[in-house]
Image (tube, rainbow, N blue to C red; front, side):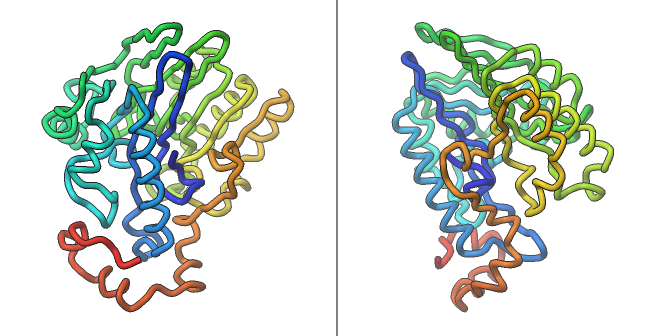
Length: 317
């Protein structure tokens, strides 16, 4: 539904079995600043489009999940057109009347996400038909099993960004694992969990190459790529996306991953490639977008408003 390869920050995925329709992590966002620049109008057009697609998918879904409480993975109930294209109405259209399986905000969670989780229960979650905290739990829908891991690190061991839930969906001989924000995985514990599931498809948030030697050490990135290469040799189809696509030269760093996959007769694809669409790495090419397609004066004036005002006014795109 929405990924970096479609031009936005997200890992929103729709999975349908004969028994249940599941919308995973119904959030979408833009990076507020990259290369010293705000999002380009083309990024806002992609954000609007993907938000509409998520709302449409939610209308079909029986279940909506929340792996953790970052805003590119869930939709809050406040108005923010500048970063999230969200509002109270948007949140209700996504979560209203649905079964919600969410990360607990009471344990294995950092401070900011605990607060967001509490607000989600109080606001968006109250419109749900049913809100369950899913950490380490399993649910059955006819012949489909929907399982959630115990919390794993958002990135490497001891990550300050907290924990996330992995989701495993199994029907017949098909088994899909959804691993958001594991950043590779950078954690060997998370790698062990993923390999232990023996899945036919894994949807994985790759390592944040753009943060190397800045917020994430080179050693952590290299270890994440090593773990990802192991996964690609064990899993027939890996959908690799999210943080890893926030830099234009991402393929140059993944040689060992593609090699391991090909040696095993497997595939590694971005979400866009899997959907048969061209890559649209808008955040990664933001600087070039501002050079080749300068925004209107009206848009530039809007970007100079204080953020508290920008959130309440849709960008002139």
